[in-house]
Image (cartoon, rainbow, N blue to C red; front, top):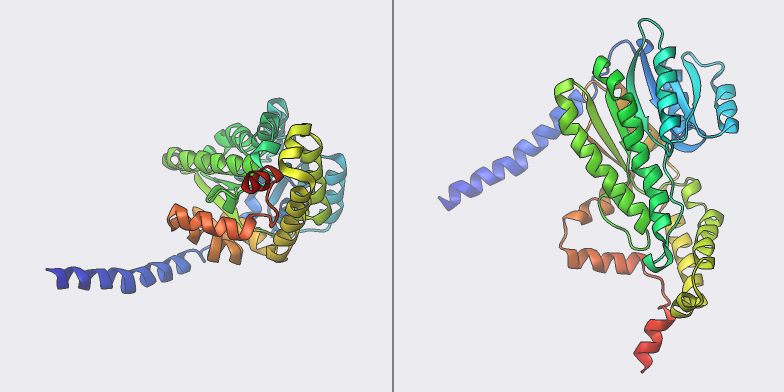
Length: 339
């Protein structure tokens, strides 16, 4: 009996799994039809992934509604898209405000011309505004992160859901590897990303009977404004300056400076310049007949952040300590050790 079980286990692992991935690779190559008859709404198009994706979709002949937070971002993408095959229409939207999201949805609905259906909504807008120990983060910091990274996704998805049911389209949301494994010193960000993953899992089940597909992107670390050295230092200094005198004494300037330097070096060393990995994953989720439910973007995501989620907690903690912990201990910890 044992030999038979081992034989079947061998068949499953070494034969069926490769066959499954080979078949999946082939069916993922099948594109959807009539891209020129499909519209996509993308948030966070002022810069970065959203802007590049909007240009790519319009270049393929799609009808693109580019959601922008600023007038400057809207004018910039309009200028870049002027000569493309498809159409780019900018939509002013603040995903933290219910009224703004509703107005954007109403605007898109009115601008859909006969024969054009809303095929995809891409929740790309996100922030990484505050990080540091939880002692440095206020409840307001958590609220601000969740208002964009989680409630922004919920607001937009709910506002556009009816149109997507009509077209049997798809909702595509970016989370992060921080939505699969909590990274130390990223409390507001990781909490929001975990919540976003949970929401997308829920609506994936619920919307499937309506023919709506839900996809998640889980990028690793990429060279964007989120990991710019100056921006990272500014965020850490901002959190530090809000602390009480007692909190600063507990941690000490040496810890703060070590944390800022270590994190800046780590994120810039790990970050990939290949932002096309994320944009291409977005594009595949929009244009493939059989998109993936989850896209892992970047070698760090594929080889470290996602695999480590399957390890025992003790191993995960050791890895996080090795990679993310500053070299200098907080003053309160050092003082306690010296007693």
